[in-house]
Image (cartoon, rainbow, N blue to C red; front, side, top):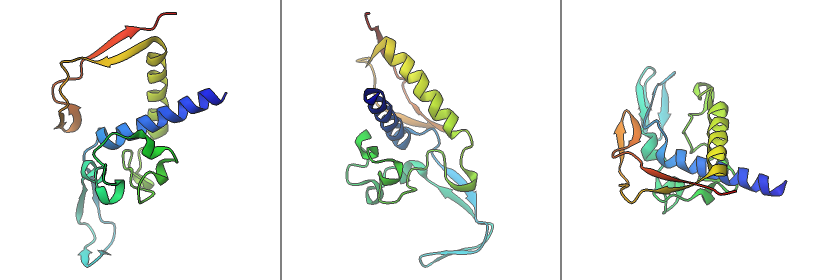
Length: 153
């Protein structure tokens, strides 16, 4: 039905925006496979390159002036149109080294989220402090206390 398609699209938009701002991987490390030139910079073959994903996902030049804001609507027209570059979202990497579990992870996240949202209303506790922290992966520094209220019926 159209209602389910809309709900699925909306959930996908929320998950994509969550991965953009709060993805578990903060940096990606790669080695240059060949000599290359990026602008005026020459990168020799074998050079270790660190891609600061957390910074790239908040780049105003790519994601717009409100790049630090949680706005799932930026994904309304799909991932490739959410930013100024079609490959700007690097939550699962891209190319031949992309995460092979991406589709499974997304399906699992959608399934679990749908099961929870069918049964409960979620609210953040008043004690919650928004403080993402780098602990090898991105995690809430003070935890994330959530209040679950059963949905009647």
